[in-house]
Length: 80
Image (tube, rainbow, N blue to C red; front, side, top):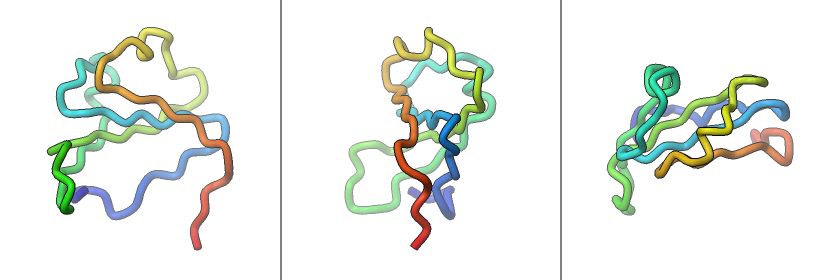
């Protein structure tokens, strides 16, 4: 995806949101989502958004948003 030089660092107490272009995001999330455009061979998603949520920012209603995936890190970031 173009628009991101690197993926964001997500600490163990944070969550990563990954949104498809069609996702009906809450306003607070939509305003701060960083969008990337498909630049590789696989163009199944033209745009995707990334956002890191700090502790306490994840809302139960986000789990019901079609096109929004929520991830929690299980290991520290691998940089090599």
